[in-house]
Amino acid sequence: MFPLERQSSMTLHRNRMKRGALRRRARDISVVLVVLVCATVVIWTWDRTPTSAYLPPESHFLKLETEEKVEKIRTAVNTETKDSYSSSTPFVNKAEESKEDPTDNRDTEEEEKQVEEVTVSETNQGKTPITEEKKLEQVEREVTVNEPNNQKTPINEATKKAQHKKETKSDPEIKFLATDEERTKKLTAKEDEGSTSTALITNPACNYAKGKWVVDNHRPLYSGSHCKQWLASMWACRLMQRTDFAFERLRWQPKDCSMEEFEGSKFLRRMQNKTLAFVGDSLGRQQFQSMMCMITGGKERLDVLDVGPEFGFITPEGGARPGGWAYRFPETNTTVLYHWSSTLCDIQPINISDPATEHAMHLDRPPAFLRQYLHKIDVLVMNTGHHWNRGKLNGNRWVMHVNGVRNTNKKLAALGNAKNFTIHSTVSWVSSQLRRHPGLKAFYRSLSPRHFVGGEWNTGGSCNNTTPMSIGKEVLQEESSDFSAGHAVKGTGVKLLDITALSHIRDEGHISRFSISASRGVQDCLHWCLPGVPDTWNEILFAMI
Image (tube, rainbow, N blue to C red; front, side, top):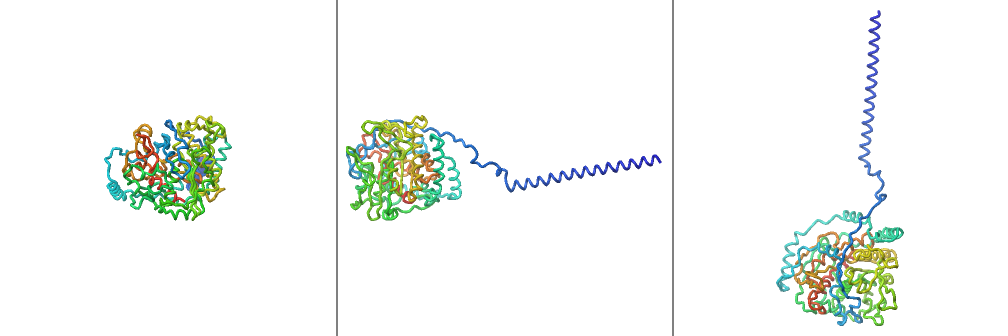
């Protein structure tokens, strides 16, 4: 029996071992099943809600701004002052005009590089003279041949809005502000103005700065020899020795939209009971004179009223001229004015009783004119740029001030930084006023390019080309060539009137060697012949308002 019992015991032991192995295998299978179920849940959850959703929002991260490159500027003595302009009558005072500096001074090297990027080829300074008709025939052929090849699919509007939203997240203009409180105020102002910015966009799908120049035999919009009531003779090339006027017969055609034809009567109806103000340097004054000629068709208008005193434009005792001009068209009660502010900031004498006193150049204050008369303005166009150089500062005894005291910030003292800071400051201030003046439409006009070749205005620089569109006829870039202007308006209610690139390919449109007041060997490659390129600036402005 013993062997039988032993065999039975061994069988029982083997059965127990089998049951234990089965239990362990079942447990292992259960674990694997649990793991598979968990993995399935995790993968399903990952697909439905990525892990980035559990990360803190981007706004919680600390954002560090890169330091902007300091702009450099060439220094050259230039003695042009505000007194370079005529006084009593609207614009004609030859004694004063003869003092006009043809440069209105140099912009920064950085701006020069940005503008030059638009150039298609070098300006042809040595071309054999061609008759006006042959030039236009050549231009017309080029436009006809090249036009079909320049069509591109318009950019999706949603993409544009997304890009704009992304670009406005950072605000480089606040880097020079002195305190955290000021930074907070600046950012708050930007946020508060978001709705106002949207309200001012009339046609967000159209980029008027992108397009091409085309020949239009219905141009110009007025006669340069007849618009003597509004146009200074120093800018009327029809009254000079220039004999080719092909540049007058070009029209700007935006690429992705049509631009409304300008009509003086239509402009006056649109601006009924309203005021248009140009505030800036002599290029702003050219735009103002252009607008007056465009509205009147270059004809004399004895019914137009001089309302300068309403805006403080009175020639002071012993002064050479008033601070600007203002005219009103009685049939629609429309006022068009210009105020001289070459740097677009407030400039005040430090010692009012001393004729030789220095002047405080308050970089963080808008011009006193804007602070006093903004409530009377419905459309505002601002500009600055060509007066930011050491020649101007030293010649006019301007001393930079910030927060009411002399500036000690060496970084801000660099002229490129000072100019950009001032533009940002004034644009931001105007934007902050839009809620108080809901009917106001404000624009900042980008830099008008210079075309000196082979030197500066006083070192043999010239712009002898007279052939239209010899360096290009089309602009396809999306962003403005004026970097500081484009960034100054981002996130504000102020709109950019972008004219830099389209003006850059019109080097033949300057006054050049034909100026009636220039010294021998000095050319004006900054100011424009009128009629001419500034008329297009006003056509775009008309379309935008």
